[in-house]
Image 1: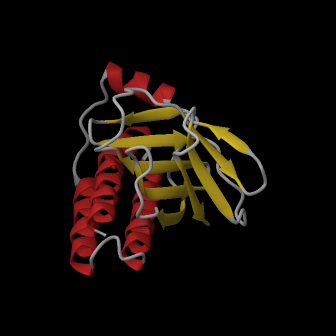
Image 2: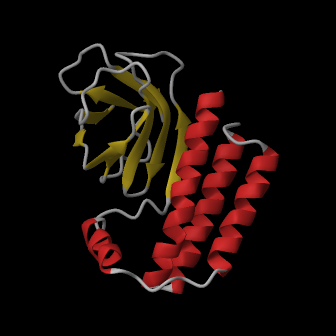
Length: 188
């Protein structure tokens, strides 16, 4: 469970950093992002991916970030916002812990379902040296989703799909393209 906590806290840190960016758009969007972050904290705590003490600490960090005066946006900020305008990752629908097994050097830590997208957080300590692997998400209805954004480091990966899956889909399957042995299926 230790790796899931690390992935949960990584996701929360990204949400914390995004709160300030939302404030550049409007206080209303920042307030909505804060409410969704609190829902995410509650979901992670309910899934036991975050302890009650850690959840309290994160709630306080989010409240302090919202109270802080934002810096003026830079040109780089404006360009980034334009590129990421297709998905908000604001309305968290479900947090799903991945299976414990490692496949092809990857382990799916968390699958985060949002109303308008899906984010998969992976550990890749033993994965091949492919810097930009391509991933596909497929649901129980047969719909295939191509990844829109991939990122990470030498030890982890984040794969985003900017189309949400249907509410009662049953399961989703994350697949590393070209590797039939690297498939993670999780129930939704």
